[in-house]
Length: 241
Image (cartoon, rainbow, N blue to C red):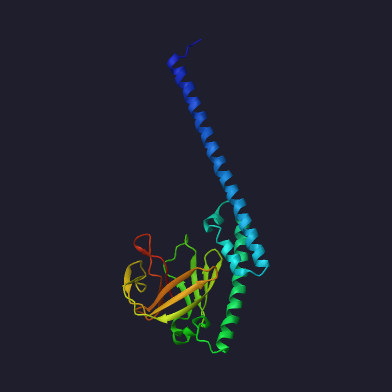
């Protein structure tokens, strides 16, 4: 019988031992990751339950605030499909009721002769900025798709995943300069500084606020930009009518 050299035998055993150790560590890592996902899923299911109960009780704004406790990135994880569907279903229901309530309040304020901007009469002098916008810097990894501003200030942002955000906007004149945007007539991501003609302040149904600066492009189309940088040399949000 041929003998295996002692050194080779030791190395073989050590290699097998290390391979087994590596496999064990990989299994432990996978198990740990799965456990974390399950824990996060249970946590988010609790948030959904709270949001659902608030919606059913008519507390729509509080329901949306509860939904903010879930990170959107969680909804793309494996096993979160049902949770994602219910998340957007509750949000859509909340937004529909909030917009309905808002329009009733705006109409009542208008009938009382109120000049409060919440009546959204501000858009009557800026009808050019009312309409449908497309997200200029389209990216399949980003949610934004279309933005619709109605004459009464209602704002709807449609997203690539079928969800939508709802809010109410007011518009006012401004002459602010040095606002970051794209040269939208070039069809590129070349940035430029613009002089804004209007400022549009949006209050979303979840309580968040956002500001867009509006101006007219060289080819005479309305453009909105939030003026914020994105990934260093890009612009965060630019919308073209």
